[in-house]
Amino acid sequence: MATSETMAGGTFTRIGPKECADMLEAGSAVLLDIREIHEFDAERIPGALLAPMQEIVPSTLPNQDGKMLILQCRSGGRTARAAAALISSGVFNEMAHLEGGILAWKADGLPTICPDPSRAVT
Image (cartoon, rainbow, N blue to C red; front, side, top):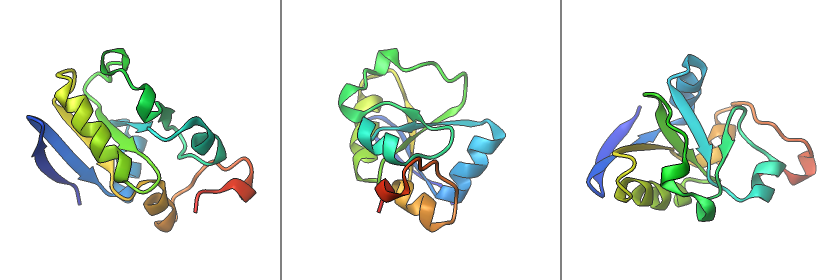
């Protein structure tokens, strides 16, 4: 179940893997993978868009037309910092993150794209 809190003058929502999957399937959310390119290439959540954390420029992120923007990393640690920065930028007043990242997604048995299983996220 999603939980929300105030962060940097905006709303930060923590979303579990199954709820995230449901939102993506319904078309009510966009998943932004903020890991590095090599991490994304090794294994990713289907439909996730890549935006490495160090390269994010808030004003250049696409307008999601009312969809929830959900940040995702490996285990959830990077997304809180990125969400605070995006909210503080003034471009976004609401942000969510996938609690536990791709590791939690996989632990819940949800699918990933993994071109080379020897490089899977562990």
